Image 1 (cartoon, one colour):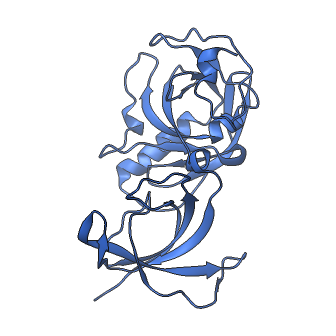
Image 2: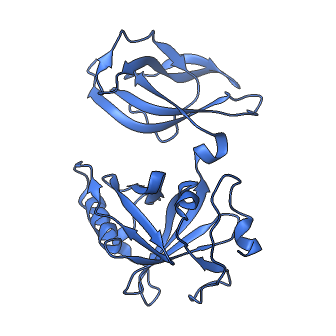
Length: 265
């Protein structure tokens, strides 16, 4: 394996076993075919779709999202979860000899703007057949996927929270419809989310009595609160070994919106 590839892999990530460089056109980087067993490497990062181009290098507008948004790919346990468009898409993944195959995708059933739904469909079509796959050894690893028609998807990897902090604690929080005044350094007066703990059993049924309402100092990554809307969230809580002096030792990340309700005043 080349030294360039080994520099970006996290210590706990499995190593790719190929050293041949790709001859694909593009910037002078070392592309290595994605090898069998690379699922753990994919799993260690969250991949943001940076560009999509056709065989002539022109942008594929059909998968472009508005407002600076982009599709993101996560690869937990040899599966793929794609977010960013209208619906979340999920399916299996197989990696072998420089190729990646996405299994049949299942998707949530939300209704969105027509442009977002068309972007979902365009991306699913690009992923329908096996793709040529290679990875480079830059500080931010890049994953390059190429269809049989030479359409190319370029994804940039960012370490997952699990890679950075270790295993998460999964918990459920009910978020009230309105923020409340609170004191949050360095600001004396601010507004915070108002939350309380909820508990669900293995069958997804609510059990026990909800906890007391409390001010939640900070934010939940991936969650955008809307005034007047109550939510129940499944979140992942990570603990930082060396948090900044003015920050919590916990990092909260949205995993799933379990329940939503518009609350009338």
